Image (cartoon, rainbow, N blue to C red; front, side):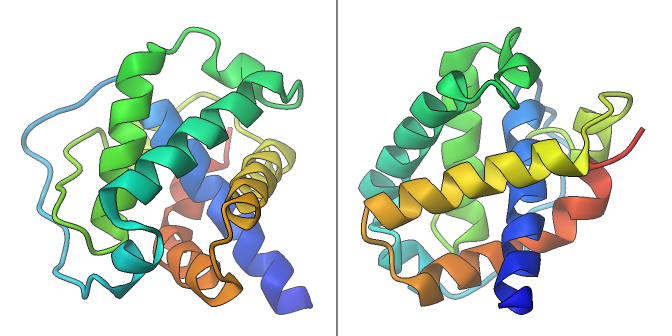
Length: 153
């Protein structure tokens, strides 16, 4: 079970990274490496991802452990950027062109506990929506490399 906990922790970092980075974008970001779209399809495509993001935002607003991190965010823009990020990372036809995770989180002081709270919320949402655990883990593995750029001083 330690492996699942580690993956879930990495996911939280990735989601925090995506969420907070939605406050600003730039157009010079490199295009993501091509990946197969199996995860995208397993998440329900565009409609499924939109539902996951909508539900995630609803849960985050109620989560006092982390909602303050999103207090100043433009929620409409945040929603759109999260959808783009999840679509892109899952192998869908979208291209995320927001700030890098490092740029978006510099100086925010996001803690491991906050990161974990967001991952817990994403997992909860995916479970409620019936996303298979294997698909959840595949998405988490793709988001995991962002962890180091999110948690920090």
